[in-house]
Amino acid sequence: MSTTESVRKIVNHGVAWEQAFGYAQAVQIKDTIYISGQLSHDGDGKLVAPATLDAGGRPADFTQMEDQIRQTYVNARKLLAEFGASLNDVVEETLFVLDIPSAFAAGAKVRKEMYGTDTPPVASNLIGVGALAFPEQIVEITFRAVVDVPPAS
Image (cartoon, rainbow, N blue to C red):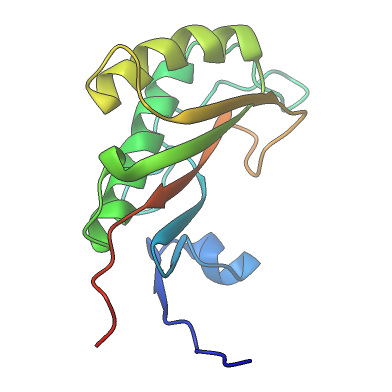
């Protein structure tokens, strides 16, 4: 049995929580790119469209869902570009959300916008969760993309 060492390419945004938690934002092995859960942060790591919190520190409403989803896709596109890929290469995504009804409505609109079609050719999962990494965060999305890889020489 022969083995070959896989070449692993890693890309990060350079935000503080990558080092704090100890992970890569995106990893490519062979023809597959795995993108860690993305959220709606800007280049400085500041959350875009943070949810307003109630007295208990939980989101008071989910009106920022559309803006958070849109910025999350923007961040995923930046990572994909580092591999020479785009959303056209995405084959699967999983949305982790605090409120399924608002995520369904917002996601239906934003996904069509970001993929540029009414029926994105992407396997998609929408999963309700009790909490995410930051209190003002109401959505996180993971992606898997497959790209053509030139044959090894």
